[in-house]
Length: 245
Image (cartoon, rainbow, N blue to C red; front, side, top):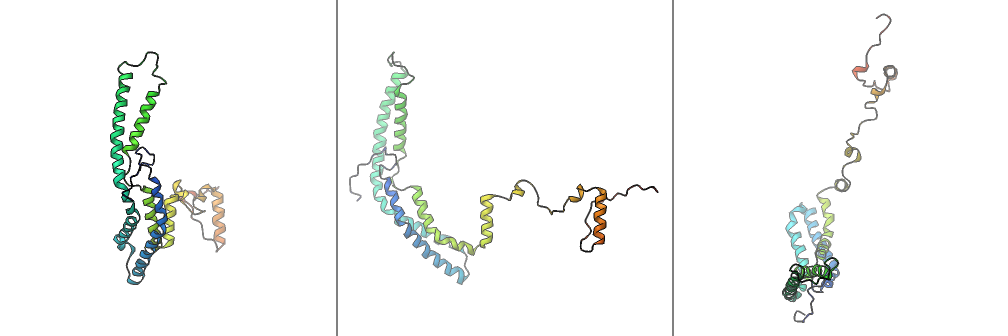
């Protein structure tokens, strides 16, 4: 396949000369990635539950399996790298020469006084053509030599790591994990975000009572053994002036 003479277009919008459809083929290998992840998860679970190991001890093994799956799936696409690299070099040379010739003529016409007198600058298609040529050259410059996207690599990595997710519960209880997850998603509780501290229903209620009401509450609570005497600020316990005084 690597010897097939491909007709690659450097200015193709997919930035791989028209081979962008090949990155969609990695989706068919998602089942293979999940199978390798499940196999690794079984081996690690056996060591964690029976040998007393912890999940962070197997970081190297997990990374090796993910890299192995990526190499197995993406390595065959490397056969297109030489032709893509050649197409990019050719496109840079050809479109670079075309851009050089165009900008020289544009400079001589509009900046050196060679433009026709009856042709206005405003509304001229030369400026738009210059911008289009710059965009075409940028597409060639950013052309990739491997027909694989970052999204495809990420999906394969996630498919490999999904079977390992239940093992995270061996490091942290499910309840605590959910609390942290909700804390990250929704932030602190509303009362804390608003700066309001949660207080008992009776806290500060005596401040809104008059002196006579406070005395009545204290007397009723003294007669009833089921209700303890409420705590009232000292400034409310001021004796009323009597006729004797």
